[in-house]
Length: 269
Image (cartoon, rainbow, N blue to C red; front, side):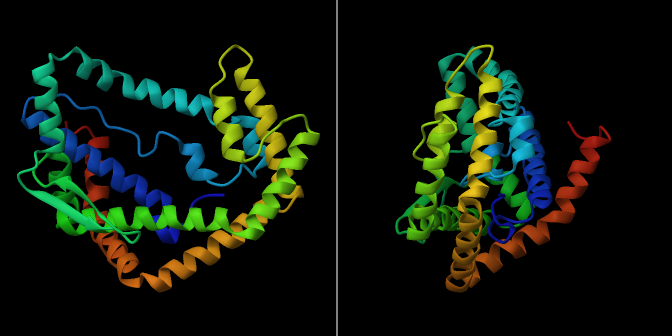
């Protein structure tokens, strides 16, 4: 049950944009004599696929709760973490300033839920946004607002009485399979916290039961229907925000594809 593409952009496009952003950040850090390794778009890819409940039996049988993928991402992050930890404290601060920038020039975004969030305008992250999207301020605002709207959509879905009723049926179904769980996310967190040689096989058994119960109790369909309805409502309520983010992504894609292609040919460092 992937997150709606209309809220965050098509998965392939967002992957390309993320990779391009990481390339630009790495180039910026290298110009300042810092090392930087590209970071994953998400540390919890299973959550992007199944934000409400795992409902794909075949996926569950093969992947469980995505433990293997999470471990792979941890290995990807290891060089960056080891490098940063090995730096003296003053150099760590300097690295962070190079990446995040300082507060001399701040970007701000007003959120639909109220309040504002900010970010420096002069670090490598902001510079990458400027190079990729042509306007770092517009992109920061658009990306933070769309992210907030996505969280709102999920919260609205989970709070709906129809979802809560289906969730109760799902919990009862899970109990009959031998798993005690009030919510799918609580079960996922509980299982992923377990370690040991049989942890992965236990994940797969639980996830498979979760997926079957999600389908049999109607939780999967209920979540899908409510998610789609809430997404449509938010798009009608915030059309300018969604259109602005879509335009920025679309205009950035040609450069992003070129950067990713050039890196693949070994022409970027």
